[in-house]
Image (cartoon, rainbow, N blue to C red; front, side, top):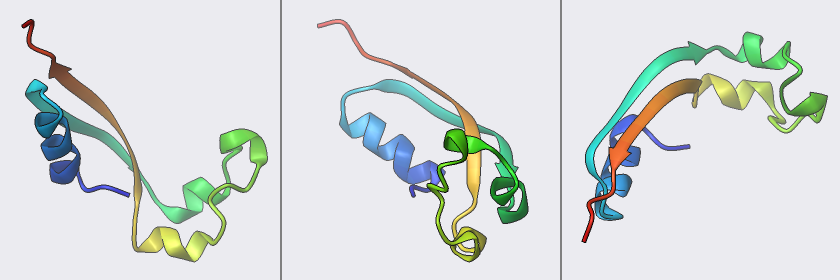
Length: 67
């Protein structure tokens, strides 16, 4: 999992400009454990691990310059 700042830095290093990541919502482990995300595949494994690395949804904006 990446922190917001890390993700922005990676996009900038990839050549994107005007990079912004706007977190719109964070999800606690209880919300994830009770969801049918991934078709109920259990892809999140140990719900306790989510207490250390929360999940979030975000708007990601960036522009690739024309060269």
